[in-house]
Amino acid sequence: MLKTIIIQSFHQPLATLDRLAWVKGEVWLAGGRSKQMFSGTPNPAGGYGPQKKLKIPVTNSGGMAWDGKNLIVADRTTKVIHLLDRESGVERDTILLADLKYFGGPEIFRVSNSEVTDIDYGQGHLWATCKAGYSSVIYEIDLKAKKIVSHCRSHGPEPEGISFDTKEEYFWTIDGRNRELSQYTNKGEWTEQLLSTPMKKPRSLGLDYKDTFWTLDLETKMVYNFRKEA
Picture 1 (cartoon, rainbow, N blue to C red):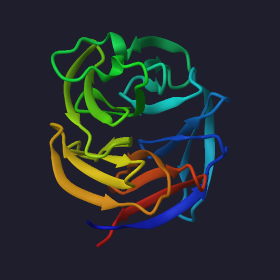
Picture 2 (cartoon, rainbow, N blue to C red):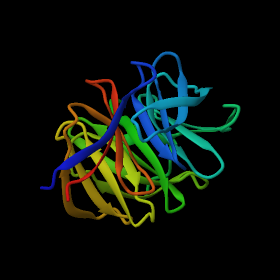
Picture 3 (tube, rainbow, N blue to C red):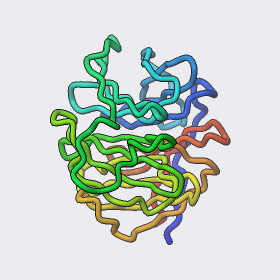
Picture 4 (cartoon, rainbow, N blue to C red):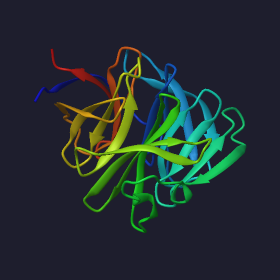
């Protein structure tokens, strides 16, 4: 298994933040009772000055994504997807994941103790990691049709982050228990490529334009940018 090397790190603006996403050159951070989301551009010296704050309608975020039109925010425990205006935060639509149409596969969104652990947008659909006990599944969701398009089993027991690479050929997950990154094809097939991460308690995942990784560490309250070991 290859290891990873930290490129840069910085303290998050609030200690209660527990969600991260990389969107068009910006690092988005969110979470906590303040219901705030920060967006800003990290600098090479390892700093982060949030350029904008936005109120979001969740206290326990299950991830953020951008579909080119809407800011998408998931609630980790209620399993509700909120589609918001990126500038104002005004809600445009809500989708209850338990109400989606299923066509075979495990219906984990309907399990009472299940959680949405992260989301990303790729290949024209929303992708979500979900866990319930030792059952962890990655779902591909058509938001317009409000149905599950496909699903695959997560390699690790606690997938806490998901993100597509720049070309949307592959996506990666990060596991909070195993502290491993796993690579999948855009069809949901695990490639058997694994990377270890030095973060103690990783939460969320983003890949930037160079396909280097970004995550939060809930133990250190730091944001980390890291890459594969050469």
